[in-house]
Length: 299
Image (cartoon, rainbow, N blue to C red; front, side):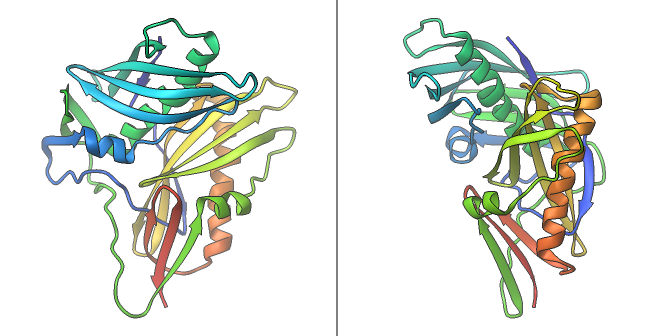
């Protein structure tokens, strides 16, 4: 089985924009933060793979491990399977959290097909790792504890950057501009580099972050690669930086030329899209929910 890490090299790209992070606030240099099972189920979302869909996703915590239940429906065969994926965390020497997939079986304990295993590794396991990256990537973890009703992390802050905080906008003279997830997918267009193609692009809004999935085909008739890019923004003096906290290729962290190509195609187009649509306005806030993204600026 595969091991996914909650801390990857960070690529920061500046644009004129911002975000709300739906994470628990880390208020001190060292400490412990706790996420309840109810909080996790309210905010964790799975990015569906291209060839299947996942529904009825739920997270069940237990001592030392996590069970993620889901109904897998193959878009080609039309078959449906109820599965449970077990993952266990461990703290690495550099302060990362490794989430290792221990097992993938049906809810009745039967072996699943290779297609289901691939689907889990590129959707559930990857989305789970991305979920925690978006909440812990600014911190070095010193411990992790999973109980039947919570996940707790012991942490040390790693730098001067503050965590992304929710922005509350109220009062006169404030303009809000909102897009639904459907409207955003209709409007967002990627400019593909020469000899490369991007297809099946989908922008998935999640609390506090944006997840962009696409099929990327490199130059010179390379093999198609299923990619998932996760970004979170932060606002400072009206300017926004979009931080890429994860880029995966076929369920694994992207690297080398593949990482550069995906970054150039998807991330740069994402920044250009918002530069064009928001213009020179000095933003005061952005709220990202499951089905909408709202930008605020002074009138």
